[in-house]
Picture 1 (cartoon, one colour):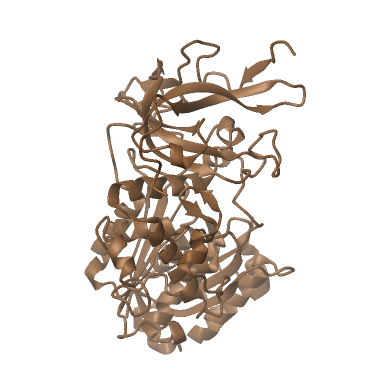
Picture 2 (picture 1 turned 60 degrees about the vertical axis):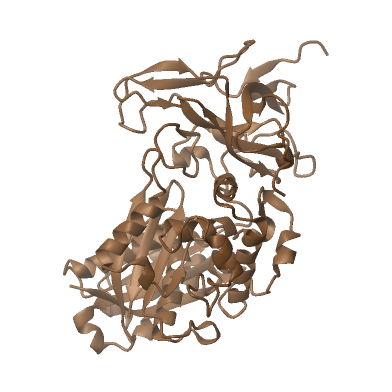
Length: 381
Length: 153
């Protein structure tokens, strides 16, 4: 049985002193239910993800204690991909007719801090100042620039594009446009990445309501088809985040490449069909690399594509049309549902000032994070 | 002060004190993968039988970045503060035929580092405990002249 999305809801991303992650998630869920024309007691099962909230399934206390089975899920930055995937799968298997995916988080300011043991790494790795995910992003794009001729200016243009897109999104965090020159003038955090080339951990929540395709006519929301969900972890030989070492003689692609290929095959859709894409832009370099790893261009083509404005709204392949992580920040549990929210608006033709022209029919969402895990979702009208 | 006391950040990580310090890796008895650090199991095959292997002390710089703000502490235990923090560099060093290892670099200036340049292992202090004991860790330093082209800035 095919699963379709009939409702999306998003609590704005940013900083909201005094508002709990759970309260933000309740706002997102109510918004998604209203979008679908569904009441909470009709929801038969759900999957909910968060880093900071130990029991995100306690959200039932905000929505109604109906006895609904609600399962907590976590895959780092790919958490929302898992929540959506499992909510879709519960329909595809015939177990349920109507399900929900929920994500929420509320992170403290600054770089993520944790003991390395949470990722199975030795204490010295943290003590000596190696346990920072941002090192990986700096080192991966530095090598990629060296191999594929990507310039510092291109990094800045990617970030400027995402801030520009965010300025047209009233739910985004960083809505002040910044020029490439301003971005290049900001301090280096991890060479070659500068302050305004990074996303920041922040706060927010999202929710997505799904149902059986053959029952979608009963609900209000204009259905969007879930064509594929794929999740892959790192293989031996891949250059991955939080790795004290990797083998010298064998090379494997990023799990993004594996998840992407799986998703295209499941969907029967190719990269040439993608009309709008949301890719993990933890930093400007990640967006550049992920375009190629998701099959949306060849290695090195980004330099010209971005100079030509191909990835802007109105370009050949609009990317991160709501501002992406750079414009919205990253509440880990919710970030991927923000991507789905944006794709659903775009495929419905309801994205307002940032609507991609030409009635886009296929949307692509990609997540990547520690400890080397990637989730890809493909949606279509 | 005579002879500042020094201790390694962890036992079994590198040979020290030594004129030719080496990283202590492992060679998987089942599949032959060379890994670092030793660790209890092989990340390729899951095998738990292994022999210790001292890794090459020289290699080439595969990639690098810099750390321009004080890392969250804990887990970082540098004796510095946000005000006194000195940026450092981090890279991956390819040890030919063995493994590519992540390490701090002794050269903090990205303009004086280049992908592909020769590097050699050094054991360096990175923090001082309240009792004055220096804690040392492994790092790599440029091995030979600074590359002619000064970075890509």
